[in-house]
Structures are given as C-alpha cells and as structure tokens.
Image 1 (cartoon, rainbow, N blue to C red):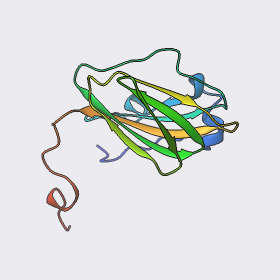
Image 2 (image 1 turned 30 degrees about the vertical axis):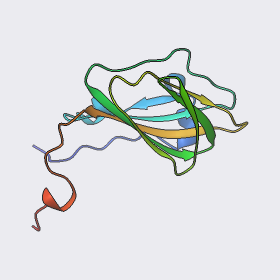
Image 3 (image 1 turned 180 degrees about the horizontal axis):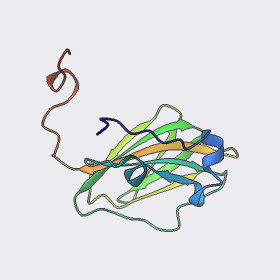
Length: 125
C-alpha cells in the first residue's frame, strides 16, 4: 500500500472552469484530517450566502487578487498574502472586490484537534 497519493487540479487559472471555481481535495487525496479547497473566483463574484460550521475552523490563504471578508458583521479587506482563521461559529462570507480573479486556498479542520505540529511531530528518518 502506498504512503502517498497525488492528484492534478491543473493550473490555478483553470480551476475557475471547474465546479463553480472550486477544486476539493478531500476525496481526490483521501484526506482524513481536513478538507482543502483550491478556489478561483472572477472579479465581482460574491458568495451567495453566509455560513458557519458546527466543529471545523477554516483557514483562508489568499494567493492572488483582492476581496472583502465578512465575519460576524465585521468586514475587512484581504489580498495576496492575507491569511485568515475563522472559528467554527463565525458567520462568514467573502467577495471579490477586484476586477481580476481572486485565488485562495481554504483549509477546514476540526477546531482544537491538532496535538503535534512542525518539528514536534517530525522524525528524522
């Protein structure tokens, strides 16, 4: 049994043509600890609803473009290099305020479930 799995989503600019600008990796890679989505949305796009989670926090990592996030009624600007963590119950939404594509990665994982990370989980083999 292999200890790795690989999938190809193609170039980020092509993600827009897939499944409403999202490529989910949970099923494609057989993830067991989180869901990861690669996202590319066009200029002027706005999420059609706000949402929250029961137990999963979300981490947004912005790669290209500019936008605005809203969490619990507060809005703030995001752009390339912005990283945002939203607690499960944070009511969130996102919009692309730019003319070009907004590209970001969203990681969803159970809040308070990480016991080890970085060097505390690594072993030199």
